Image (cartoon, helix red, strand yellow):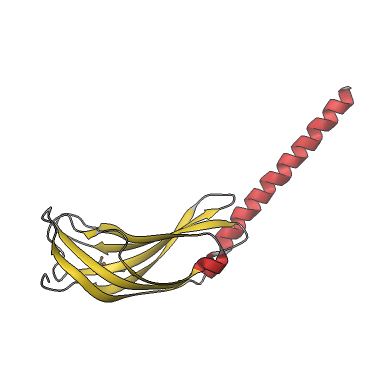
Amino acid sequence: MHSFLLRGNAVLTFALTVLAVACVLASLTDTLHSSKPEVNVEILSVDAFGRNPGGNDEVVLTLHISADLQSVFTWNTKQLFVFLAAEYESSKNVLNQISIWDSIIQSKEDAKIQRRTRNKYSFVDQGSNLRGKDFNLTLHWNIMPVTGAMFSEKRVLTGFRLPKNYM
Ligand SMILES: *[C@@H]1O[C@H](CO)[C@@H](O)[C@H](O)[C@H]1NC(C)=O
């Protein structure tokens, strides 16, 4: 009876150790894994630009989002949360960051994105700072692993500018 308990304890300890080591290895391979994502975003058209009823600048864009995030996936990747943010400076804020599109990618096969889309979420300023505004479009992706900590990566695309006048 005494030795039976001891053996049970040893087996459990061993199992837990193996599990812990597997988890550490899994998140370690994620850390060492270097992905080579390809990202490109184009503004196909500015479809509306003016003050919304709240008095804040609002712009409606048609975008072409293309990204190949297949290399981000490892055997330890559960899913990616991808979002596109418009980022710009204004007198009020050093960094305005507005999420205008997002998507959840659950498999490597789906990680090649080709999307022609309007901005899914409103591109609205806190004020009227958007005329002639230079801005960046940054594709962020949060990597949710099967085991280990979530981490995120991004690709900044620079050199976008909004029209000088409302339309
Ligand atoms: C765009 O990104 C570049 C590089 O990260 C940064 O230097 C620049 O300030 C950004 N521009 C705007 C308008 O936020």
